Length: 141
Image (cartoon, rainbow, N blue to C red):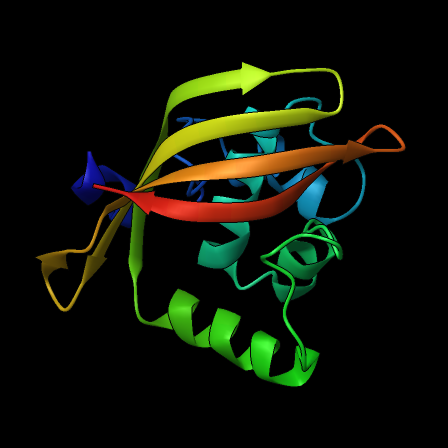
């Protein structure tokens, strides 16, 4: 599957098998808002792959542990992460959604320098004014 994705850059990096234009691009362009924290995980994953730095920052809770200052350095770090990886897809493992908060466990499938660099993360989300925001994440072993 990873080979197919690299050979077809029109597919969305999140692994949905949809075109980027019909999947995560509308979120990145501000034309749509993810309706669930799971959809936000996919959109953020694709944003890292597509170097949509503003989307990553805009969908991070400013009151959460993931928020970083100074933003200039954060932007550099996001770009560096995206450039050094090949994004193969993301799998949602579990989700517990409440009214204004959620926990999502996902596997981000990545390759770096030809090696598997995938990781599993348990992420916390908050919902403010109808928008889901990434608040914090911790690696799961």
